[in-house]
Length: 195
Image (cartoon, rainbow, N blue to C red; front, side, top):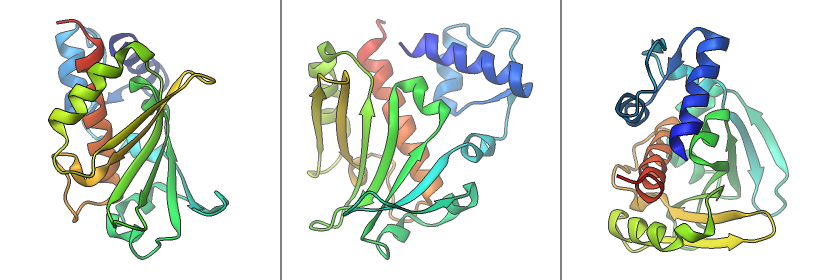
């Protein structure tokens, strides 16, 4: 799954922009699977975040409060604590590499932990592999929820960001997006790629 999508992403960015910026986990995967032959790598990953669509939304109504620019992602994650009635909806072309269909980040009103919610394009047959991966890699007891939506063929996923191993309260929003993406890349690779 990842191999084809990452290959397409690398080729498209090389054609459109003359190079591609990859996260370390993507670069390792691409190198291992021979996806970088003749491709130009851009060392500056900031370009990845410049294309992220960022909407601040009201939890009660899903109404958009404001569209934000990439510079908004330099805010600390604690921004959500001072805006508890809001959630962030994020989307980017590169989310599709691992099958994420939009990403929402918010703080839980009751327990005060951070949550990531997203649709995941992955076959239903991978349920047990996802459960095993999440149970063995998430740290803490806040956990996750998985629900397969047969109508659109997506998993509705909810993960406590606080339980992702590289989480820290001091992260910026950009850092949080990156750790979520890297964590999920590792999960999708583990559950779908045959070694």
